[in-house]
Image (cartoon, rainbow over all chains, first blue to last red):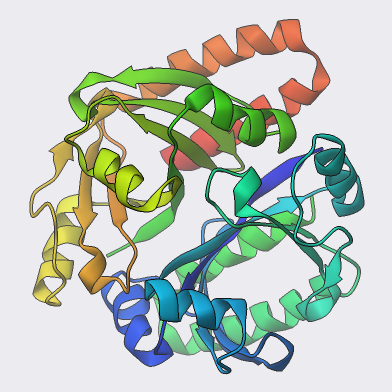
Length: 175
Length: 175
C-alpha cells in the first residue's frame, strides 16, 4: 500500500471561534472555510498549511465519537488522516496484516472522497484515517480555492502566501 | 508570524520495533532512520511522508515529559510540530498575544535546529512545537538522504518512491 502524505490533523474543540483565536489569529494559519457537516454532526474549520490541513472539529450532537472524546478527554488531537493511492487496496492489505479496522469498506465523505478509519488498538493509540481523492473532489476543492483567491485579492500578501501554499497542496493531491 | 508546514507528528510508544510493525510494515511508511537522542532521553524512529514526518518516540528514562505522558495516558499522539520562518519572531508574536509558552527562547535541537513548545493550555489541548531550520541542519539532513538513497539503490522501486517524497520534503524546507 502507498501513503502519499498527511492530509490533515483533526483537533476536537468545544468552541470554533475561541479555538480560531489561537490557531488562526495567534499561530497565523490561514482559515480557508468553516463548514457545517450535518452527517458527521459537527462543524469543521479548515486551516491549510503546506500540503496538509489542520481541522478544528466541534461536535453539534452529544452522541458522536467526537462528542464523547471531548467529554471524556477535553479538547485535543482526535485523529491523523493520510492520503492513500488506493483505499480498497490499502484496507485489504491492512486486513491481511491482522490490523483492526473501524471501517472494513470505505465510507463516502464530503465531496465524494472515500474514507476509512483504523482502530487505535492496532496503531499504538492513534486514531488513523485513510482517505482517497476521488472524481468529484477536485471540483469541490477548486471552488474553495477560487473563493479563497477572491478573498486574497482583497487581503494582501500575507494571505496570498497562504493561498499559494494551499494551491500547492491541491497540486500535490493530483499527482 | 509565518507557519510553513507541518514538520512532524510525534507519537509516544513503549516499543519502537513493535510500533514499526504497524507504522512501517502494515501502513507502508518508509523508515528513514532510528536515532538515540540522549539529551531528550529517548529513541526516535523517523518515517517521512510527503513534506512531513511521523516520529515514533520511546522514552529511555522515567523522568521526562514523554515518559510521564506514556505512563499516564498510554501510547498516542504527543505533539505536532510546525516549521516557522523565524522562530524568535514567532515567539515574540505569540507572547504579545498572551499565549502561554513552555520555552520563551528557542532551545537547540538535533542538527542545530531551533525549537520551542507552546503550552496546551493556550492551544485547546494540543502540545505544539515550533521549529526553524538553521545553518547546520541541511548538511545533517543531506547525509541522511544520502544514506537513504544508498539503501534505495538496493531496495527497488517502492522504496525509491518514498525516498523521492522525502527529498521533495527537503526541497520544500530550503525554499
